[in-house]
Image (cartoon, rainbow, N blue to C red; front, side, top):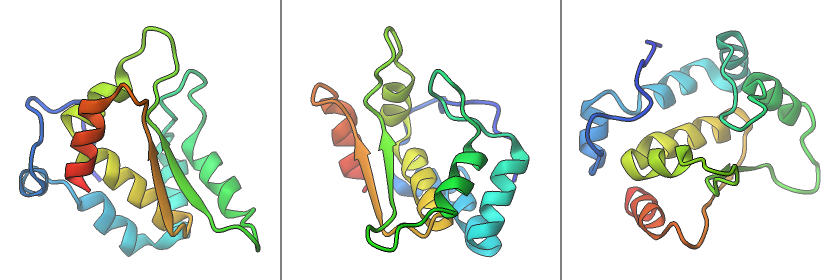
Length: 137
């Protein structure tokens, strides 16, 4: 997978076709080729870290979740777009500019963790972002 130097696109991505034309969807395709364990191995090897203040290693988190699947409760991926850090606008900016990227990432996580549910949580005041996510879904 190629390195993407930009976090935000030059212009907001308004349609799925535009996202796909710019290369969107390749991560999910690669994930399905690798399989759940392969995705976790790849994410671990990449050094990818969470965007929260702790920058926790994503591969470690996914491996822990995968290794502790509940026999009672289904695995669920939760995208925390509530942006709780003071003065932070990173989540809001990504959801507004390219909700397809956020959703593709959530689908990759769900595939890797064999989760059948994805929840995207945003603050009630994030009306524009919530609308962009709903339209993308």
